[in-house]
Image (tube, rainbow, N blue to C red; front, side):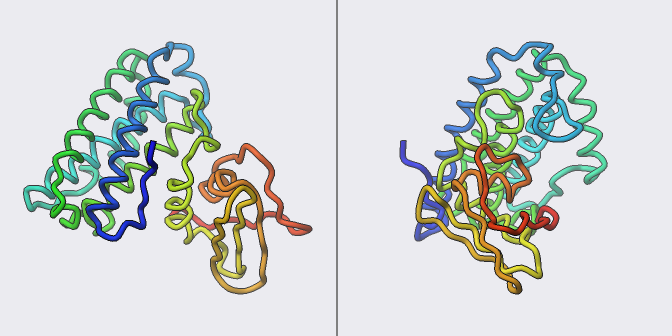
Length: 242
């Protein structure tokens, strides 16, 4: 399988590769949800305070919200990501997490189909249409969903974890998460399993080495599968999610 190259020369080229990766991710998520039991839905996820049901309810809600961004953008309209803002989003997750395993599986499957329909309807000339999400464009929505899909599929702890993230996804995620780097540190991230290197900020230099997926997991606030080496200094405290 060819992984998406988000450095492609045109927005349409890059977006097409992201959509291909998203469709693959949808199939993987459908597969891991096939055997979801009621007991498994109530077990803890990788996110503190959230069960698997909470994570699946969030995937359902954010997927529908982002699909709506795309549909309205294609009509030349701007809408908020969530009607009612963050409080409505949070309430929807709590309510959705109370659904049965079968209901959650069905809801997520419908949302994946909804996202697929929205993204595959976008023409090459439409990726730069504006959206309300981060005052961005349709391509930005596709990238957001790629992140949400990969991060939260791993958060379900149903088999696929950060160690399975593609190198292209890690590269994109590291760039997106750059604002999490400490302001007073010149933080260098060096992959020990490839050529990737990222440097953020200014100040006292600190290099953290590890597998690319582990570096990405750490910057994303997830537990790395393997060790990270920051020398004699402890890993720095990261700033909030961008």
